Amino acid sequence: MSDAAMTVGARPGARMEESPYGIQSKKLAMWLFIVADSATFGAMLFAYGYLRLANPDWTRPFAFWPAIANGLAMTVLLLTSALTMVAAVRAAQAGEKATSLTWLTVTGLLGLGFAVLHLVEWSGLVGEGWRLFQNPQGGSVLFGATFFSITGLSLLHVIAGIVAIAVVATKYRRGRLDAGHVETTGLYWQFVGLVWMFVFPLVYLMNAR
Image 1 (cartoon, one colour):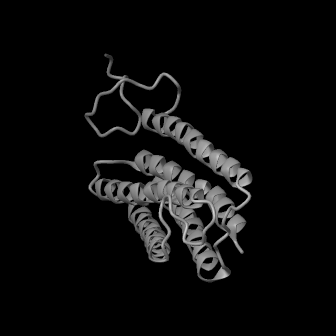
Image 2 (tube, rainbow, N blue to C red; image 1 turned 120 degrees about the vertical axis):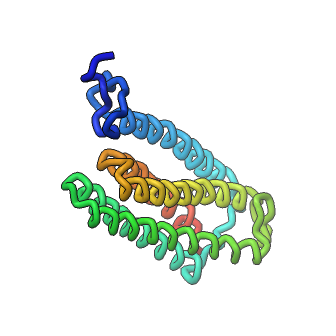
Image 3 (cartoon, rainbow, N blue to C red; image 1 turned 45 degrees about the vertical axis):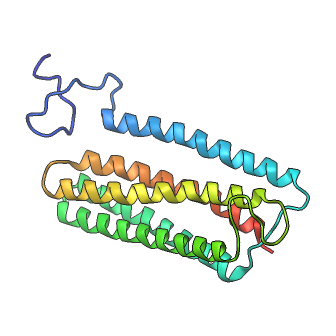
């Protein structure tokens, strides 16, 4: 392997083959993950839509307060975190490490706020008797199955993103990762926010009373 065969953005001394696609390997891997994960969410939302239309007794349990209001608050937090992540990526690309780390921290805290609100919502629904295959209002039991599955997968992605942001920020501060890693993490976080823009109207607003 020649001296030139090193990945762009790798740590000094880390020798790796160049990506043959004109894009950093880590960024290419993230795009491939996003494409595959989009198919997963797409299939789940399609199945949810089919089940909703196929069941005439589909339950619409969400009043504006607290369910829709809580969903709106979660949406605002996630949209705001998308903007702070953009700021973090731009600062990293400009070589402003301290500023980038500040915005990464803000992004992680906003994501944590989203997760907390989501868990509080789940706790309230479970307290009302909702389960994966249990409907306390007497309608289709599939409502609980689809709601907890779709929102659970979305919440899992947010939690994974928070962990990733914390790890990347720590290693970026220590000089073990570079701006390219911040950008790749930003791609994942923007994907998480984009998914929620489909989940919120389909799962919450369309099930409002």
